[in-house]
Image (cartoon, rainbow, N blue to C red; front, side, top):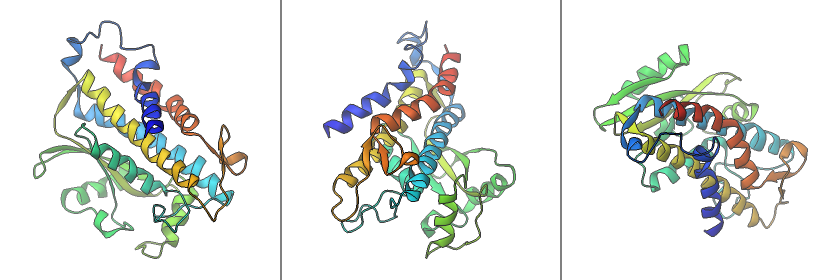
Length: 269
């Protein structure tokens, strides 16, 4: 637990440390004012998620499979020595967020899901048809749940995604190809606008989720008894049977996501 907490602090501080701290003039009093619409905040966190998942899918799962590493939907079972597939990586992030204090919801749905429980219905099914055509985000207020909701296209961005879904024994669609809209990530939040501090809390909540699931994966590897363990350090699977440490992985996430996020945050000062 100490390791997880230490790494979490590293990533949770990204938003403020990447550009030198809280923007000038953004005092505690000012930061309590509503600075962002919920649509803006959900777009920010969705963008970070898109970059993080693409990095994990291509650089860890895709390149890792080429090195003989295994990834499985049952990766948490004692008799399965593997890592989480991209969709389960996202589920791990969502579970971490759910356990935290920030009322941010996250889940992945589709019209052809592996798990029938993830099939879109009602308004979301209708909006997903639009997303498949234009790949534009859709925003609406869920009257039943009383939550502001945003849906973002989830694309087949790597061969690992296509192969896994096409070959899965429970698949209801076996002709996926690169670039297809496979589903949509759905984000929810109860308020229509957020203060600067609330916005940072949302981003931090997502960041902590990526930390938690990646560290859980590395801990799973340490428990392998019958499989060759990749060397965990500075190198990536593209170089051989290696995996980056949590710090190295998250530093790459930070470099890819922090600039765009900070542009939004600084603009609110």
